[in-house]
Length: 410
Image (cartoon, rainbow, N blue to C red; front, side):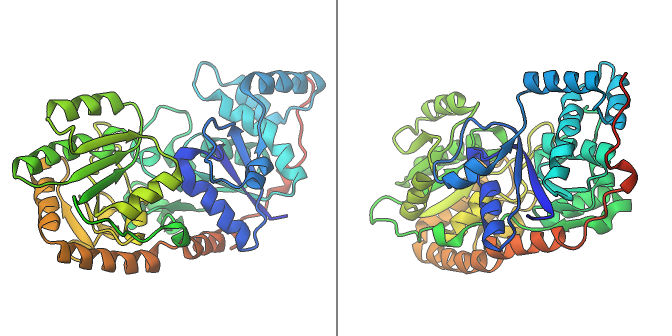
């Protein structure tokens, strides 16, 4: 049994395939790490191995958990630190995180878990925070994008999470530097580890002759910049370019984007496919000419940090057109593996796309360089080895004074 374990909000989840791939690679490397999930996912990925999905240890549903914790109070089994914390909670939000931690702590001890790692500075990380307060179990977490960049009003803040963590992982140098500026006193424990991809699962792009194919993949949300891409496609059509563009993904803006496609008169060349399974995404990669993701900053500060789909497109040998936002310039070398423009600038985006559409030889050279760069920097074997080294570098001991202390019957 591994001395550390994963704690997720939902696992495995279709929208977070990188998480289960990381767990799988961790196990391939010999770390039999247990996985705990606070909620049951509704969208288990089709290609997630069945044995991994069956091995996940789920917490009870909120109603069942609350009923069990009520019994604990009656029997005097409640950890006294958790009991005192919850008695003083009042009307503040996020009480469920503390209740989940109170329930989970004894299970972790029984399973021999001495360190928890969570993905995202959200529900799982805040639960891990309370695990440390109640039971002294150390934790770390991986911060991604909006979970760090967008402030919340939860009692446990991002600053609290960083302060109490053994270490923090970010997905890019950009977010590492951003978080170090925010928490300078904890800068030494903030480490960048790229999101890894399974290079063997990415097919090489071999588009058929005929109309060039543009591809964009991601949820239909504002930070993906799909409105700008649709407008850029309208500009390209106005310049006489013949192409097709597939936007693969679903989400809250899907209908608004369909309306925009109709308004701009590009329904003949721009297609919104809705969400697709991973095998279909890979097929699109293999049949496309170039990849585009017009990343943009949302009004609340949310943004993509290091989009995994860009790494996958590079691994397929596609040239990439994107924006100079967050960690994207760490992935795409402008003029070498693709072209970068300013965010929310459809005119500039159209110009970059036109450059590659009119010069297939240049696009091919950029794609080849991107494939080599992806193999060097984004392979999941290397990125998981980096994370595993951090996790196995000696988490602090569980404080003995916190072990086995239960509240009196109150």
